[in-house]
Length: 248
Image 1 (cartoon, rainbow, N blue to C red):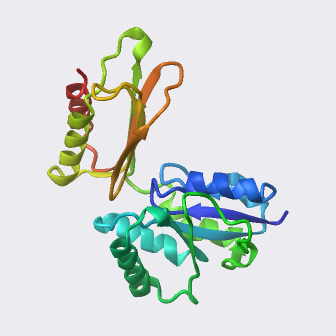
Image 2: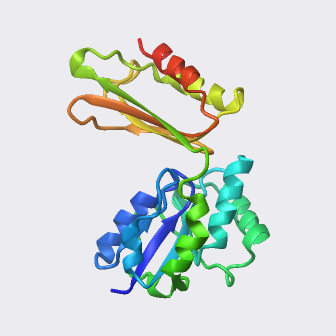
Image 3: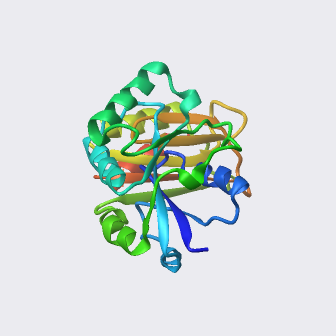
């Protein structure tokens, strides 16, 4: 095997989920992800060439100038665009992304698009002809400025419910995190975790990205909850206060 696939895109756009779906159909093709918190996998160097596909979550508009600039840099190095969660995006937002792509990277002939539905990948998708491959050496040269992203930070919180950890008030948590973004200038690019809350009987999974918040039913491992916050300009002391204040 001389060729691999590299998935890029802003945090939380569905790279890991897409990789899982792709590997169900083409398990022999190695798939790597570009993570802003770590360097490109050295295993990628064992391949001669690689297709670079950039994922864009089109469920919401993008209002962050910093994130938009990083996305543009990723698209310059990509050979194809994966529009993710298409079935969950309204027509107005889909139109916004069509216009954004046309303005920033031109028509589909210059950079092909694939519309990915969360229900899975179609069995007849001709991915072999989706985008051209480039040398792995060129990929390492062109993407090293994004991996890791300068000043990109992360915080981790763990809640051991077997030891009496308090429940999280989800409303207070989301209000505090949103205020951190809107009023204090923190660039929360990724919020992810599973916690027990005061509002629901079952654990709640939290997914936050540059442009949206989502919550849904989650599962704990060994009765332990967790929360991870990533982004730019993080005031860690303030965020710790938000976490503490949301525990009841």
